Length: 100
Length: 196
Image 1 (spheres, helix red, strand yellow):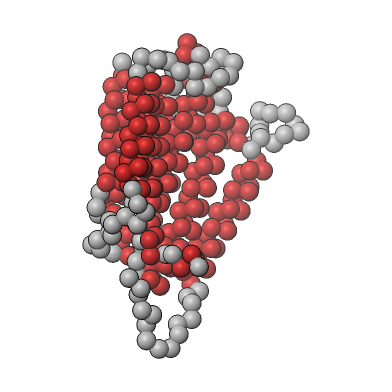
Image 2: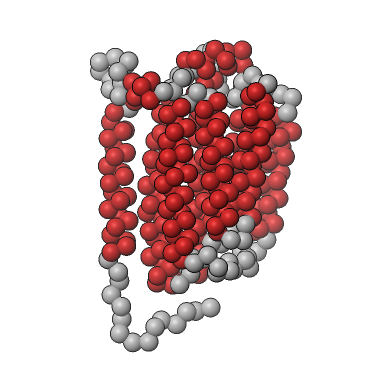
């Protein structure tokens, strides 16, 4: 296997699956997992591209994406728990209070 | 040959895990599918000699983040049924159609063709194996790049973004604690009516 093509294709498929889940599921937890899936797919492209051009910048980018994803998950799950305590539901369809 | 076998096995596992995430009815299965996907991605990172990234992928993602997900799933209940009725008209059909179209297009275009995904000097398929040695991502090598040990004196590599990221983590931790601690004041009276 020469070149990053198979890894890019796999990452693309994973990204599409994540985007599909984000747009079709109504559970906030599953939507968060889909976002994680998309971030992981992008991380795979970073590592494969870094190997293709032969420097470390792709791996550094993965490091930062991972930290930002961890922070996002911490705050997002705290918000989900807070909303669940208030509304007894984690479905995003019922969170239309701010619609006016 | 070994790379092809590993790619086939763990690529299948990754896609199956991803499909489990978006198709499973129980959020626990979604979390476990996501864990399988992340684990197979860490195998790919090791195949790309990104050892440090693979290690933090397993420790942070499949360890910490997925534990957090499982905690929250346990906290808000595993046996509740998700309301699967769609509020937006035709949203599900459109999205699944678009997703299938894009995925099939990618597979058809990828098989048999070698795209030039990365356009940089020395990024051709012939240099793929040679470049693997240059990106042997041990902790020492990544740390030298991260803190600018090999760059010129005027630049410090990625040290400033690294510190900014530590600030971001502190803000996230404090924000999560604040969200968990400071409850809204409960109004005296009957509980609010759930509009349904």
